[in-house]
Length: 509
Ligand SMILES: Nc1ncnc2c1ncn2[C@@H]1O[C@H](COP(=O)(O)OP(=O)(O)OP(=O)(O)O)[C@@H](O)[C@H]1O
Ligand SMILES: [Mg+2]
Figure (cartoon, rainbow, N blue to C red):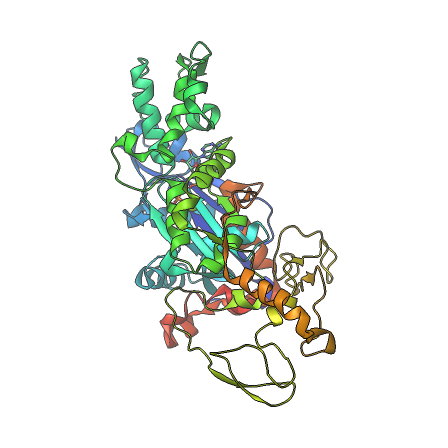
């Protein structure tokens, strides 16, 4: 292996999707995007001096598809053809990035639930076939959330093959609440094909998949009330096929094709729709997280780029919210959000405690007020501010910030939220109530324990600007942060303990 100094080392980000591969260097604003496909010639070339290739990849493959036998390496998130996968990787290093793999570090985002064995296999492939310097198998949904400037939120990642609903708290995936749906971009394309057939449009070209995808991306949208929109069927859309022929179809096709995302039964699928899957995921989280998650539903992946998806998803979620039961009142303490993260975690209840004010022993099972000095146990929560304000400029690098993140996505500096109303000092005179105020304090405590059915503005859908490349963008930012360097592992470290691959991003927080 050629030795290189750290200055020579560049960080490359490789996100190979089922439909599109996104690659580039850390710090790049935009990746290079090419279709994830490879092709071999169907017929041997008869002209001896004509330059032919063994394998065509990406755009070349797309251009030559008529004379090629096409292979797609992925299906529903799984690698189905390893040869094709290697060809894509080789194409990335040598043709797209034009770099020497032995001089680079690789960030490779993987799905939320990729088995450790697959991660190890891919890591070894990078080290043993391409001899890269070091590898970080990142968590794709965490990267996508990061691109929106968040480290806590409900990530909806929908690409070509799969849709993932991934709750993330402080950069850590809540694994048991992750939902995986085999309902995604290719299903919308498939339903579009069926609908077009109904209007006599039959696309039979070798590029059927790509043409349907293109029609879908250019014409389809999601409506709040698709039946109403479909009534405008006289509004005809025409699309010019690559061979110059034009096909025509009415409004109902454009609006009904993406309906599959809310009604998978239209294609005979027995899976939850996207809104229902979000509710299912929330129901597996402790209810104290519900509001936080509902306030930061982040959309990522090309299949979330339909116009109107955010409005419709919000409406559908509102309809389904009653399934969760009453929502707890807005959280009072940020600390209370920290633990427990899982449901069914039994935390022992403290029965006896010593009053921090006067030292009296108090039985907390019967009272929360010290009989000697009037100190209220556990009442700190009522004085901790109900909300925090996040600075809109990083105090370290002064770059503009958006959203709520515990650190700056540009320089990695820690961001400390400012309480909206400063807390009163624990145990201060002001804190100890007079007897006549006890009634009021009891009411406050009571309010914390009750629930409110809030039909109001509780859902917020966050739309990162470049949703189709959100995973790449998040990884690109992460790769530029100096402290992220500790996430990479070298081949030597990997051999010492292969289980260390994919170190948790939350370690940086
Ligand atoms: N503007 C758009 N409107 C609707 N759909 C779109 C749009 N742009 C891309 N898509 C669809 O998004 C899907 C590709 O998204 P993305 O690139 O995130 O998937 P991928 O990474 O290739 O797949 P996966 O993540 O499932 O492996 C395709 O189905 C594509 O047709
Ligand atoms: Mg993807």
